[in-house]
Image (cartoon, rainbow, N blue to C red; front, side):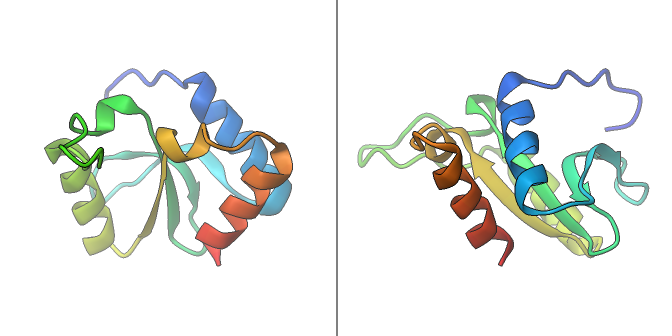
Length: 113
């Protein structure tokens, strides 16, 4: 939200660098005025937000190993969607599963497609 100190993680830097290789024009920490949220990565002209979701955005895995977004993360997604944004999540557990830059680029292209 507004007036909050933003710290950019290495994870977010990694996603931003890979995203820059597949799509130009994304801004880091874009302030969305209607909701007051800071978007991790945003393409304002197309209203596309890429949220880089580390472990703090998820509940602990359930009995099947599935991680579900926590309440604050779900609220942010809902409010951004209501404000006209297409919200794309890049969960840490998916991102960490890629061994190469090429795999990460392909992943991002699929999400953006």
